[in-house]
Image 1 (cartoon, helix red, strand yellow):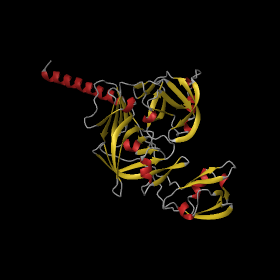
Image 2 (cartoon, helix red, strand yellow):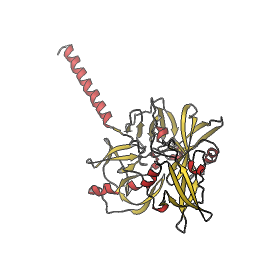
Image 3 (cartoon, one colour):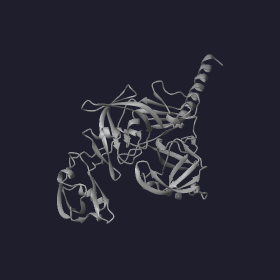
Image 4 (cartoon, helix red, strand yellow):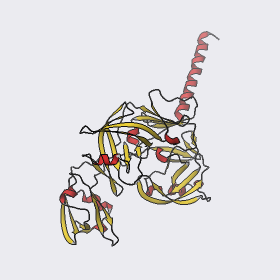
Amino acid sequence: MNNKTCYFIFFITLSIAFTACAQKSESNRVYFYFPEPLDRKIEIPVTIDDSITANMMFDSGLRGINALMIDSSFVAAHPGLKYTDTVKPFIQTHAWSYSKTSAYLHPFSNNFKIGNTKIEFDTLQVLDWSKIIGPEKGLFGIPAKDRKSVWELNFDHNYLEVHSDSSFQLPSDCYTFPMHNDIYNWIVFPVQIKFDNGDTLTINKPFLIDTGMPQDMAIVAPAPEVNIFDKKPGAAWIPYMDLYRKRYTVKATAFNSFNIDSLCIYTVSEPPYGFYAIGLNFLKRFNVFFDLRNRIVGLQPVKQYKRLVRSNVGRFHFSTDTNPAGKIIVKLVADYDKNYFKTAGLKAGDEMVKVNGIPFKDITWEQREEFYKKDTLVFEVIRNKKPLTIVIPIDKSEDQRD
């Protein structure tokens, strides 16, 4: 065999080896997407028992439970997932919703994979998932029993990869943080905030890393910073369940050196959990590494950041409640200058009787959407036991994005 033949065989062998390695690396990556524009969340294709496929939401804010959540309709369509050995029934809710539904815990021994990576969960939660969060078939996070892998959320190329190779190292340009209090999705880091009037505020608290929350950052009462933000002007009031959250857009510096020109911070007065969270729009600025071996989170700045924006979200104007007598009472009118319900004269305590001649108690959500397309709304209310008509001009130029 001559030298040319030897070199040819060598390069062919080397090429095959590189191709095999590339295919192996690629097969461990699962590409995700963001269902736009109605929602902002990560959807990832998964496989159960090598034959059942579905798109499920990835939520890093599950705090390390060893459970997989699946919608009851999905289980009904796949009898192999049903279990008779029920651990216990319970009521399930979602962190950002007051909606609740019955759920059941079952032992879980099915083969659950993302790409070619098997993920082990101890239990299966079966519930009416779509009533709480959306159309996905279910939800999963990083199981607490995984203490050896590195989970990579790559926002440069939108893929999830679970690295099980013990030699895998985080990129050198990562900001790294120890996992706080032995719970892998909490980290502590400073954020220096600068308001438009020159005031500054530094927050250096444990932040929950929550891909299930679409916003940049949330501060939930009774965290003391909520009161500080409430005194600042210019907040956008965003509908939040039957209440609201306030959005403040500020300049900030995270980790003492990472500058953010437009950080959207949301303050939440209810529910009273008192915590801090960074969500999907903050995390999309980085490739995120959950290094479970070394108990470290790495944040590697991405080359190009694009915020996820919903284009169909109006502003919060007012909320109502039903009193023991069955009357619908205005609970709160948002206190900001551009709230045209406030400037027209609607007040907390007003009893809502009719809107455009339709009894308020009979109005559907579809009719409410149509109301905002009109030029004016005519409210018939009772205030201090006296009937009152309030004409509200609709501001059609109001910003509808979030």
